[in-house]
Length: 454
Image (tube, rainbow, N blue to C red; front, top):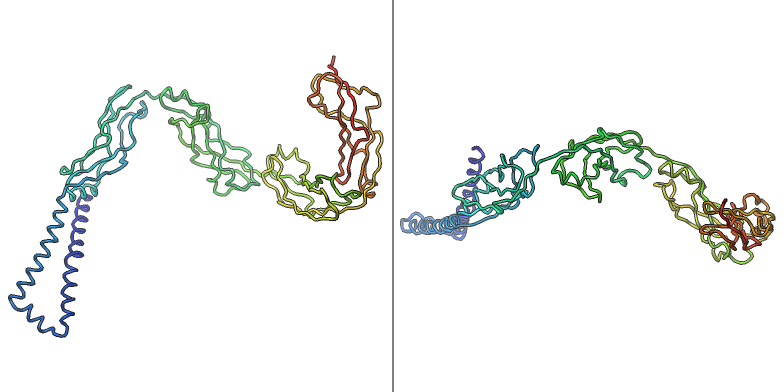
């Protein structure tokens, strides 16, 4: 009731302000203006106002002005108007534990029709939401009327829609195991990793109509890393973790989940490993004739990499590729370090590489045994010619580099990938650990026989 009186009081205060602003203040300004114009002859103006005929004329003018303004305002207030209140919420009453209701709109639009003053007042007065009472209705299809408690009887209210066709289902429940999904991983330092997540419960109940429950393939706890207060190494607790049900295609399923939110304990680690930088020249065979690389130096020799431990274990160095094609003299390069797959962060983003040249010489390494790679399962291989089990390798580079070259670091091999039973002529490939050396086999191809194992 207090709210109603407050609203009415506000309404009349606004009318008073309107009269003060539109009537009293203009009249006062009018007379002040007249007074200013007659400033030099103020007594004459005063005599006019004190005489009876003059006073009657002024009063008549003021009365006519007030009449026309009041008449205009009152006409405006009694005119019929209509206003629409959009998206007004609906409140349904039914046993939510036992039933599921479909087809009931979430909001309706209300059209208010009546005098402007009444419509204005109706908009100010507090009213209840649109209601629908489903108590006592059994599972099935029903047409129900939406009801609205009128604030003023002088205003006509129209709901759109005013009737809803609904379907009531019995609510069933099913126990489901929950797993988790970590989202917003980019919201924490790339050096940090989520090693493990422990949920406060392993199972929840999903509730809804039976057909909808049959669609639920999984229930996930969404571990949102942006909600971590201070992401750092250690264990942190996340409260009010949302649960979401998904179907087999990964789409959300609208069901009730009990409990709807849980608590998760997040274990944060920062796996890291220090590995060397390895400079690998590209297009080394296109370097200017008669020259070879004598020295490669870098301002960064080691870097620390961060990521999953299982992936870091497979990385022994970070390759940095330098294109030395057509190189004629010593040169410095600034190279951006590319993170290998599985590396989330690296301690250095770039490295400066200095490549120095010298005069090229060559020598031969004899009796380098051939290795066979990528032989298919259930197969065996042998050389057609007994002399094809080893090759002579030619190495080129500056004299000081070749003098320190360890022959055991040279590998000659043939790639048997995709080859089946039969005789094959296969190219010989050679690699070595020193990237300043050019390797090639004197024997470019060998003939091998592949047979089935007995």
